[in-house]
Image 1 (tube, helix red, strand yellow):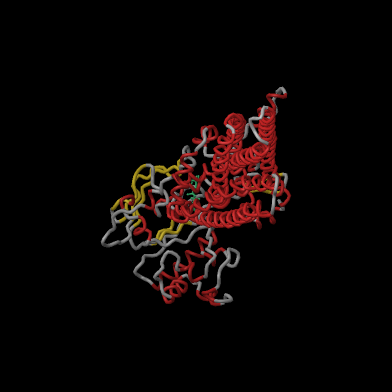
Image 2 (cartoon, rainbow, N blue to C red):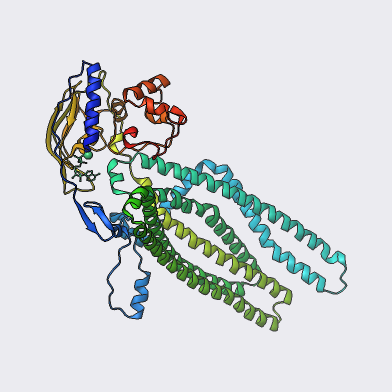
Length: 583
Ligand SMILES: Nc1ncnc2c1ncn2[C@@H]1O[C@H](COP(=O)(O)OP(=O)(O)O)[C@@H](O)[C@H]1O
Ligand SMILES: [Mg+2]
């Protein structure tokens, strides 16, 4: 079975001539049916930055869209300033509107739990270290106050405070080691989780249907794979871990305070609750901005990837300036999202610090009154203030981390969306045929690309390709030749009609078994960054060196391959070979 579908006249002619030569040596195959090529003239038009071919996008169209100005008062402008939207080209239209409104804690946490499940032992160890570190740190102020006040009493010798200081030294060393062990375990866990998450996402992406890749850009997807995955797992290693430690300490501190003086403790707790309220509010803002930030990052990444991979086109058309401007406009949009993040964070920190330090003032005021009435000693108040400081600091840090967890929730949403998508039908298992001749029949096939549902790429096509014949498919650009070949390779399934291979519907055949019987020379060849040998044997892991050389000789490639610096072992870059050589 061999189908050649080409747009370019010279490649078509050279292929036809080459196959004529092959055919002379293989008389079993009937000759090529020559068909006259009809060509549509290439239309060019003048554009401000030079000449662009009609049909390609003008450079500015992929930049962030600017919106018309409305007349608003200061408050309305302030509110509008906070309304952020993800860039259109990376947003997923259906889910986007609600997902900016609602938090998705549960899906993120269940995903994180699933990612960390294989490391249960290490996680338990890390938690034990965390609790030990938190508790030992919590005890430090108690012993510090004890040492100070034991030295202040009458008849003091070294022996009075030495045991306390020794205990304190031991406690501090223990705290240091426990903190180190906690940090070590959590960063290992983080690395493992990032590795697993990226591997899962990648495995999911390579199995997605061809239509998915028609609608997504490579730069955006690599950004999801890199930056978003990192942001998601970082939340376990640093944010959740520190947040838990601080919460633990805050709770411990509150219990201790309650034992010292229930009334002052209640007042402190009230202020802490206010602090938590502020955090939850700001956390929501942080989640939204982070999501938009990740999307904008993905869009800018896409532009960079596109321009750098099309560097020759950019040079040829002299559009370096335009491309620089396009990338810069994305950077500016990212900066403007960052500006909102910074403003929000500034407001959060200011209110957080004021509230947390006010706690101390409240405690001091209540404490001073108690000392005045003789219901509390100076030692108790000092101890108390140490712990109020401890509790407020711990809650403030916990709040800070909670905000970052919310940001991770924002970053995780796209990753989770991608992970939830099922693999393509076109990689599914199915039946295999005992023998395979290669007869192909297109029976009343109609097809629209999912990304262009209003456009019929194929309209009721009926075509029979007999086994053992060489068939050239010729037609105007855009008439559907490549589409027909894509359907035959089962990259897409037809919307109507069916494709029969050896009289069996393609949809019922085992996809990978069927693909083992297909060879493809693509119209726009791209090679993997592997050796020439591995590129030729791609998809055929059991091919021997002799098989590979025979294939290269058949394709008239053996001679130029042996002239490469390391012959078949030369690692090819996309620029090393000519288009025809790559084919
Ligand atoms: N991935 C795609 N997504 C949406 N539309 C496509 C896609 N590929 C091709 N088309 C459209 O389908 C039609 C047939 O294209 P194609 O089969 O590539 O033509 P050709 O005969 O030049 O190979 C064209 O109108 C083209 O714009
Ligand atoms: Mg084509």
